[in-house]
Every structure is written in structure tokens, then in C-alpha cells.
Amino acid sequence: MVTRRIGLLGGSFNPAHRGHRGITLAAMRALGLDEVWWLVSPGNPLKPKAGMAPLAARLASARAMARRAPIRATAIEAELGTRYTIDTLRALKVRYPHLRFVWLMGADNLGQFHRWRDWRGIARTVPIAVIARPPYTSKALACRAMGWLGRYQRRPDQAKRWTTWSVPALVLLRFRPDPTSATALRAADPDWARRYLPHAPKE
Picture (tube, rainbow, N blue to C red):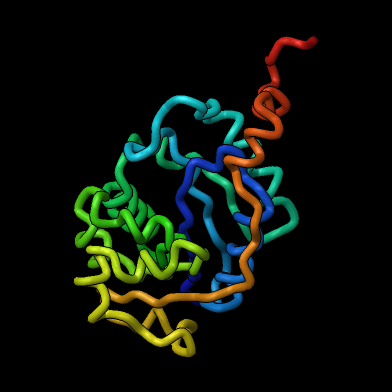
């Protein structure tokens, strides 16, 4: 049986937008992935709750943005009852032992990776692909986590071989940046979530 190669991209998706889709498809090509799962978070412990749309709306926006692409938008963390990435990864590896997972993250998240629960444990569980996001990249590469992860960095031209890497392993991927911002989208349309909630009151 051929082992399927799955990328995992976690986030609030508040809302999902074309930038998420663009970096996902680019990462799929660079890493030779069969599919990417968007893990729509029930609640990010490092993000304020104010301004966070309901999970149902964020998941619906992610599913709409993922249409006609090998992207699965899922709220599996809510199903598993996990709040932290390390717990989610361990649960997924137990549930899907026949799949190979790689964690995808933007350079902005790498900059605060040392604040994640058991971040070294995450790096020892799955390979990590960091997607450059100007202007965050330079700062992220000088961050505390990279002081430890840097010794495990792999070359981008080896990215498709990630299933052969021993962990920890990290690769930095650079794509043409997309300026789309969830913050800007919310500012332009504060009521965006109502379009995705089936029982929202009509005006």
C-alpha cells in the first residue's frame, strides 16, 4: 500500500482566505503532498478570544475556500478534544498510523514557536515546513526556537524527501507572498461570519 503524504496546517481561519489556499497549494508542490488538512482551531491559546468568530463559521469559510482542491478543512481538534498541537499530533498518529504527516507553519508562527506547549516535542514528532512570510521571516530565523531547531534544518531542494528524514527536521520554503490578511478582511467586513452561519438572523 502506498503511504499517503499529508500536510497539516493549523490556524484560526478567521476567516479562511486566498492566502491560505495559495501557500497550501505551493507547499503541496514543494513537498510532494497528496493532501493538506486545514485544522480549524476551536480556540488558539495564544490568540485573544475577542473578535474570534464561532468555529462553525470559520470551518464553513475554510471549506468554501478549499473547494476543488486537495485540501480537507476539518475541525478534528474539536472532535478529538485537543487544544494543544502536541496533543493533536499524537492523537492523529495513533488514529492514522498508515499516514505520514508534516506540519506546515508560517514564519510568523515560528517566531513564537517557543511559546507553544512542548514545542520540542512537536519537532520530535513530525517534520516541520516553515513557509516564509515577509516581513516576519528574518525575525523568525533569529528567534529562540531556531536557536535549537537550526541544527536540524534541511535544504529546500530536499523537501520532497521529507518522509525519509529523521526528526527533528525543518525546511524553510519560500513562495511568492500573498498580501491577503484575515485582519484586513475582518476590518473590511466585520459581519463576515454571518454569511456562514445557517441560523443567523436575517436583516
